[in-house]
Length: 178
Image 1 (cartoon, rainbow, N blue to C red):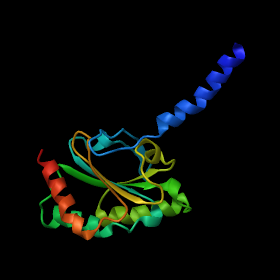
Image 2 (image 1 turned 180 degrees about the horizontal axis):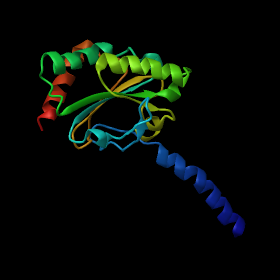
Image 3 (image 1 turned 60 degrees about the vertical axis):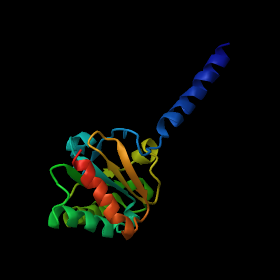
Image 4 (image 1 turned 180 degrees about the vertical axis):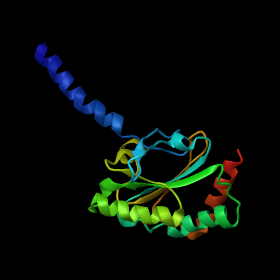
């Protein structure tokens, strides 16, 4: 009987964490919280931008330029055309450090250049937390749009076609007005 209980406990120690760690964020779901740091090791959560619509770029550093055209269009809509109100919107990056061979120092340098280019915050997911809790793909570039209540309103995996830019920008505009 002791062996049976011991075996059950041993098996549950391995199965429960596996089940608990593998989630998939889908449109309509509330996004699970996280805590990541920036290059200065300052901690951020989604609540760091409470009351704002979030555009989260989850990026393998090897794919860091994949959606520059889209991000340029969003920045133009916010900073030039003034159709996205920055008081109610925050776009930022989370670097998927686990998906690359690049050393963390190089990753921070690349991220620093992107942060300056887009005047934004770049955070670091060293352990692939969002791969597990949100089901984000490895070796990719994923854009997630969350409303002010942290409900996922859109997920774009891979390169966003230029033909989708205006649709996504309009979604962001609509969400900032809710």
